[in-house]
Amino acid sequence: MFGLPILEVAIGLCFLYLLLSLICSTVNEAIAALTGRRGDMLTQAIGTLLGDANLKEKLYSHPLIKSLSPGGSQPSYIPAQKFSLALMDILTGEGKSAGDATALLDGLTKTNPHLNKVLSTVLADTHTHLATNQQKIEDWYDDAMDRVSGCYKRKTTLWIWIIALAITLSTNADTFRIGKALWVNQAVRSAVVDAAQARAQAEQHDGATPLVEYADPQNPESSTVLKVEQQALTASEKELLGDLLPTWSADMAEMQLSSNKLSWWGSHLLGLFFTLVALSMGAPFWFDMLNKFINIRNSGKAPDRASAQPPPPPAQVAAKGAGV
Image 1 (cartoon, rainbow, N blue to C red):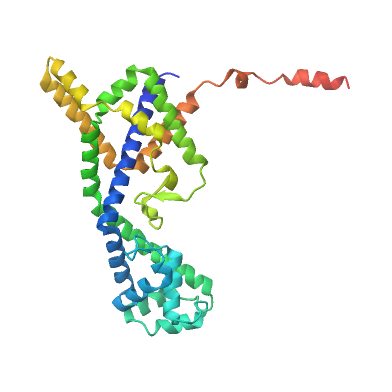
Image 2: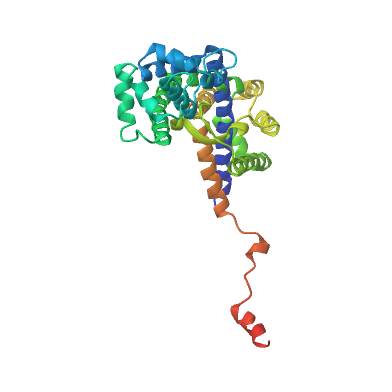
């Protein structure tokens, strides 16, 4: 296929950005876990959603919600089903069945006017259908979490840029230098493309629940096709990444031999800047781009010899049948 090396270089760079973006996501999640910022934002959002501090405390004390944070810390996310079941149980009164739709509606009149008005609108025309009531509460909660997800993503943008900058500099991930290495070294390029295809195929064949960008399965706005167990880099990917990334010592030695050091630094810093911008786009973006380039490459490859053999002509088949 014409231009196949260029396409393979593009696949290699997308794969590099994907792996480094996954590292960014891992570091970001570790910081979020240490600071508890996701749990704090979720608590604040649920408090605003319910409009009642006392009801919020009851919700967080409910066994269904407490089970999400066995260590005693605030949960970083609450599934919609557990939220709806816990809220319905609280509204119907402790010790009563959450399956009693009448008790649920009676409980609405005992809450604050804000929640009473909101849930009365949410549950309109479903007073006798418990399953529908539960589903509508889940939808109401999911809609609110969509907005929280967008807000969280905006607030973490600065963190993502800081982490991406640290990873770009620490790994010396110069896009131009790496792209050149992929272009001139067919063996390295082939190894990277094979690894990229292996990850893409593993994701496509895996039936696990989709991973959300910030590890929160209740945030559909941030969802991605990456799977939870496939987020971490494999041992072979780590080794390949180490071989692909140039070391600072090697680059400094090359710079000393350069006849135009200013030009060398300009190119190097621009290459680092390209990588920084790429990592800020996130792993989901680069996984989608990687799949697109792989599909283009596969669609343009020549078929195998065995599969390229034409079937027997219809006339020959008919001749064999005529002798029966």
